[in-house]
Amino acid sequence: MNNPDGKKGLAGIMITSFITILVTTIGLALFISRIGGPGGWMTGCKVGLIAGVCFSAATICNSYLYEKRPMALSAINSFYNIFGCVIAGIIISVWPK
Image (cartoon, rainbow, N blue to C red; front, side, top):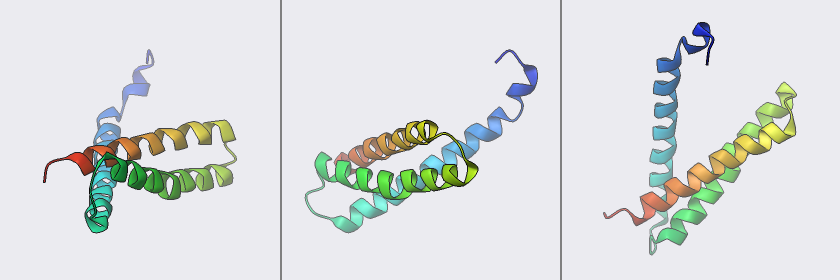
């Protein structure tokens, strides 16, 4: 980022990003607590995968479709969010209660 104008608003982006990630992890925690069951890492992986594909990736792909963005960019951003949901699901499911 050599452009000084490119750094404007970076703090706001980081704070908003943190809040959206916090909302996502709270939602995953609610899903995992409602499922009950053994609560091992595999449960977190499955819940994270379902949430990542059904909510994050579907929403991203739908938005990119209407914005006519490249499908490769849609796939990259979708997999990034799916991976994040899976990791968050695993951490939440194995966290001591």
